[in-house]
Length: 110
Image (spheres, one colour):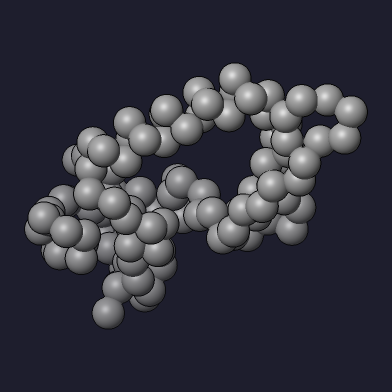
């Protein structure tokens, strides 16, 4: 059994196999997604930081995402329309659940 997630509003329990339970007890990162416990490669990537680079010669900007465990950042060019669409998506996603940082969603066993 896996217990408290430390996320607001939530105590959850889930059955996990012996191997995954040992991994959690050893301090592996884990994440609960609905009724599933995600461990290791299955965990969503953690955004460490982001920055923006203005575009020269075209309307828009490059969003630079630095993801934990990756040496090269992910770069995405966004037009103003794309940026507005992304902002609407982020607002909708954040209003469905309590605000939390990636660090609050990922845990180490104690």
